[in-house]
Length: 203
Image (cartoon, rainbow, N blue to C red; front, side):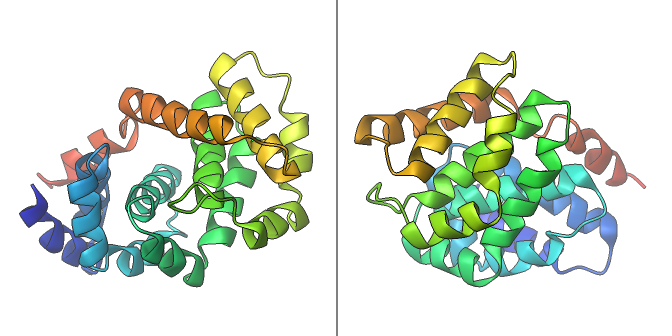
């Protein structure tokens, strides 16, 4: 599987849109719950290529790009730093703002869990500089307005992220956030975007 990563990263740079779309879907699937594939994607400089698609006109594509870069930077703090340097914080904040106005709890949960994982380094320490950027962007205020959700998972994710932003979170709560992400990621792989991209293989 890891051997397929470099060609897929090259597809992200293709001038043909269907190749780009298929590469995004494939990388989302290959890096999901796979440290080896996520590291291979990082080594192939996938973050650079993926960030060129952060403003894709296809919402599902933007969501998948966010998930892929998250999978990559969770494996190495150097990749996290690369992501931040490429405008990753503002990308995740924008994704969160879009999801906050969405009626779909899963889109909101994806965005919140991405923010949560960006806040932590590999040792589980909270990145204070990123907390400051989130607070200045009004993330906590929007989270507060989302607390009346009927989704148990979303409600828990909101509570945990707000605690992290306030500096009141515990190590156990940080670990629980990661477990919540893994459980959610297994249940929601590329559901809406994949069929469109897969169909384009035959066009």
